[in-house]
Amino acid sequence: MLLARIADLDPERDVARRGMGRTPFAQPRRDNLLSFWAVTRDFVDRYLALYYPDDAAVAGDAVTGDNGARPSEGLPIGQGSR
Image (cartoon, rainbow, N blue to C red; front, top):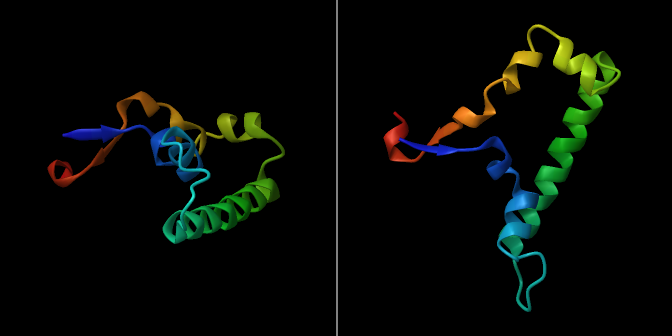
């Protein structure tokens, strides 16, 4: 089974890692993805701010704090993940 780290799924990091931030040609997929990512990230930040004053409060919450407890295990990707 193939595994992906959560950080690998961040399109901003992916674009930077591959050196695709600036290209001499149009990249509509990249531009759209980064636009959607920015909107999604803003929504999540604002939503969490309603309930948690800072990152420590999220980490201290019994439900949300455990979501990142095992990031090294990765996420299944590809055909072998079923």
